[in-house]
Length: 227
Ligand SMILES: [Ca+2]
Image 1 (cartoon, protein in one colour):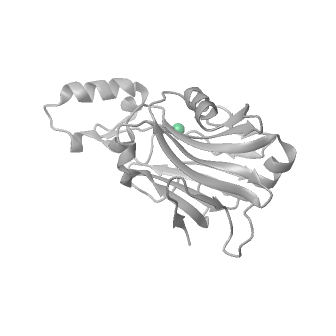
Image 2: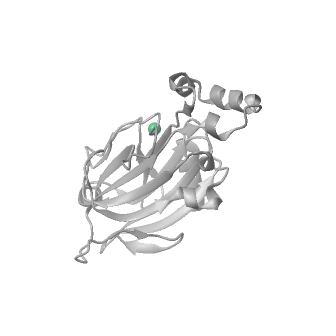
């Protein structure tokens, strides 16, 4: 059974048997924006700006659906708070495969298909024993700069085990960003952190919206505000 985690809440990620989860997968699901269906026809200036912002995406649009390029990233830090590396669309394999990204989805779903658009596999035991990583932050940002509240749905889930994009996976935790008004106007969020403990990886829900325009800016914010 999955649970919804409130901001600031900490939990050691455990299986239903009570054992600590060593391997986990983070996934995010989202959909394209239906501009023409949601905006008055007279609002062409706004439409124009939005389509310019996402020019490559807009070229692919059908005329009603606008691509949304969200990026799921795990940023890692050592015990001194130094950035050790990010697993992201531009660096899909980190630490010899200990953390692996499924690949960049630059569009989102035409409609909600219930499947994730990007996933990151996190081999907790390998990360804990073969790297200097002490904490890992789960980040989501809107590369194409649409605001989170414009996007029809955004769901983040954490699964027990290592799963490819289309694998059915047992869900441990989930966050529904769409139902949280604090994300209105934001295009980046520091979702959660994983901290290495003797009992396993402890997950803390953060849910901090930011106005940061890049992953680099978010990593800087994490260093100054969380480490
Ligand atoms: Ca993406």
